[in-house]
Length: 257
Image (cartoon, rainbow, N blue to C red):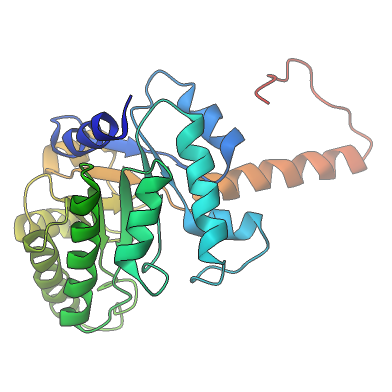
């Protein structure tokens, strides 16, 4: 699949009648493991998980060169489109997107960190312009932290902020709007009504409706952030604890690496 084909496919998946589920990965072996499943239509990286793998805290502390090297390794290792979590763009959203496309990435998360709306729109515009200049269809998942960083505000306030920002990002060329939070069905329905059908992207958390229900509600995409890595690490720690207690490795371990 060429970059142009991968980009076009990723954009199509966001408007398909079927919910786009992307399980987040953080290195080549995790990417290959998930991509081997026939249900996998695309992958997304998790910036927090990649940073943790290299010993950095979340929040753009990892050097951008190191982040781009890893998302490029992932993109080149699999046959499905890859969307990269590029945080807030590491100080230069347009240049970061341009370089990510050069690594084979055809979509990205770009978070607003609840910065002033004009600055956040400008970042989306820069990212879209960079992708257009590269001639690759690009699925920009513009993230607003209206709830994540502003959940101390009344619901109607942060909801109005999320909808205003979401619409502005779509007008600036984003493919969909990512509103992370542990939302129930009523909140999801209100976000879709305000931002648009098949335009809202969510993170899968305990209170978020099931994938089948999200399809009915008009959600475009669901991802899982750092949680796949956390589940993996919890299993590793549990295994180590069992071995330290005198246990032995179980039979039938699948050789996935």
